[in-house]
Amino acid sequence: MAVSHQGATIHMATSGIHSYSGFIATFVFNPELDGDNDGIADENDRDDDNDGITDGEELDGTAFTPQTWTDPLRADSDGDGMMDGMESEAGTNPRDPASLLQILSCSLNGGFLSICWLAREGKRYEILRAASPSDLRVSPEVLDTITASSGTGPWLETESTYTGHTPAQDGFFRIRLLSE
Image (tube, rainbow, N blue to C red; front, side, top):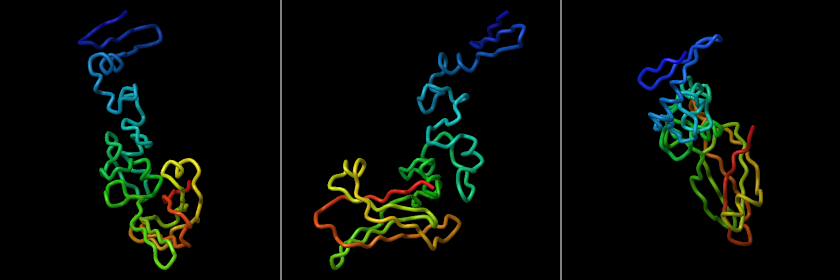
């Protein structure tokens, strides 16, 4: 037996009651209820904003140390251009737009290259160099690997610096977070 009420259908069968209201309500009557447009209704989607963190982890803050809740409907809760999942991996504060993995300065001094970036204590970073931006993604040269130390505050933030001989030719540089 099927009963329909304002677009929701309930089907009663010998195995129990089945409600199909979510599918109909979301994809037929309210397609905008798939906030990240991934084809999964938000009510059935474990990650409504596709930021790499489940909605439950965002609401209870367990994806971060220290525990910090984020908005499960915004991929970038603080609007700094770094998705919450990336901030979780980098160990940066997802509610502070100034807290993100970024190069702070790059300079040449007496034949030495110096690169300074915002880091988190205990995280490991590779300093990469390549002849072109596309080569940074495909075949970079690893100049060094550095583990950040001496972080302060609840996020253990610090500035890390690489200093090395200047390469013979111009290049592009990148700091890459290594997985734990």
